[in-house]
Image (cartoon, rainbow over all chains, first blue to last red; front, side, top):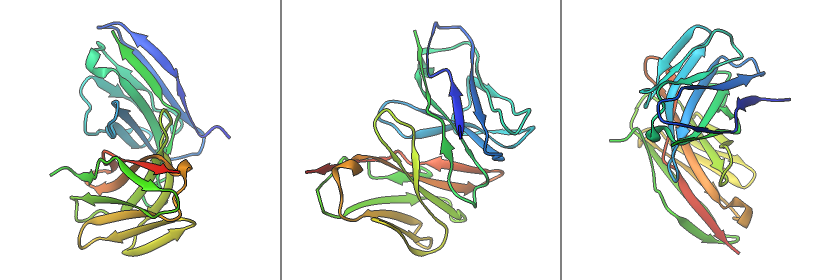
Length: 113
Length: 112
């Protein structure tokens, strides 16, 4: 009963490097989300998807890209990492907005130096 | 105006007291509202959802929704030290696509 699985849990990147944060869910949820959480702050929505092949920008999309080729997977791509992208990243999924809230992965702690 | 607002706290209550957490939102057509609990260093955990005006009770937790006032609250009765956490209010905004926006969170400390 995995739920939402994120990899890696921790990562240190150098400025200008790129990486992909992986997210997979096994609950057959249509909706998936990427959030970032800076220290002492709430969650900011980066991108979301309402189904395979459909993605849209959230509150803070700059510097990130996503794709949703399958229901299960929703990877987040960081291009040209910057110190401002140092944060904890959470992936979440939900069946729909009306059936309940979202289930979260355990998070990825990213540091850009 | 920010889309979802909460008192930042910290809120301190003695053990056994009622903790009251408040949230306001800007989108008048929002229909779905959620409360999450987040322990330090952990991911958010859904504790309550509410969709209709009025109260919804689940154990020691009561969510209250007033759509006319664009206000949702969470009451925690008989507060325990294990309730010490940050509580996040989340609202599903009915824009082009459904998306869930979180408030900044309220830090709660229950003092034994």
